[in-house]
Length: 376
Image (cartoon, rainbow, N blue to C red; front, side):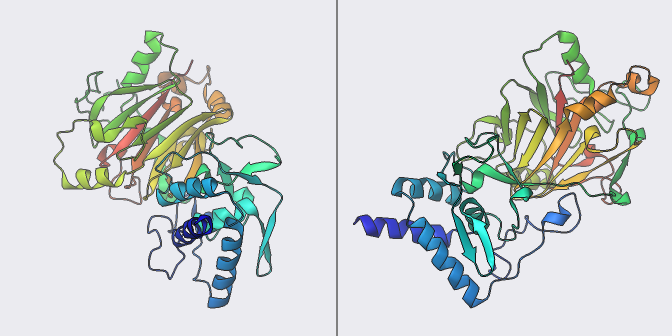
């Protein structure tokens, strides 16, 4: 009975492995061209029968050596695609496995089998801060839970000109071209491309308990109240099996647009916003790309900002503390006239904006977030 249950878990895990191109099941949101993750999204051709059989035999051999309870936890993480909370799977970090002519560490093999078949090197990965192995260097045992990892989103250099977003659009809310901004009760529309008025109110309120607040928008209308964030990590989602955070699905929206409703349904597991020692990271947990604009993602001297495309399963440092400090130029009259711009990150779900899209402003995107950092 013991062997039968273990073998059954191993078989279920193998059936839940990440598909490669040619399986007919490949995640349509994971790959694509363009965006900041372009260099990390090379498609993998379906393995030939020999290498597939070798990989299957090796994976079965390794999984059968793992404790039954650990197999159950790994299966929970894999089958829920990270939606269910799963503890760390601590296994020896020094064990190597060989597939063909290529050798992989035990964690790397599990990451390739269950998340990213095109994964080549551990430098492409970023561990999530919720993991026990986060921040540890060369531990004897390391977490091998595939959903405690993310792919590292590297910015393109030089950036494509079509995605540049002119700084001229970032006018302060009280500029002549701006309409009424949102209020604390929500529901007020505005005509400016960004709604930054609430950040000023937060700074003047003296509230230092939060490190950021999040506003959810549908096109030009903010939905719900500002969500104040005190914890180091926040899940922002529409539908999550074990969700704890900012649930967009619970907000009351009067928007009847079919496009808004379609995009809202695609938010799914959404994103994870995490405050870490070097900055604020955004992890795309959904099945579709997200689009991010942040002043710290670009050259501080640039007069244009880029809209960066982040694919599912990837993480990006959306806000860099050191770069943000360089944006605080007390002698720069233009910057002091709009001090909140450098402390705001905008994130759109599914739909992008900018010169390569029909939507020139984020306020035309169906569903998007405004993350306003406490400058104090």
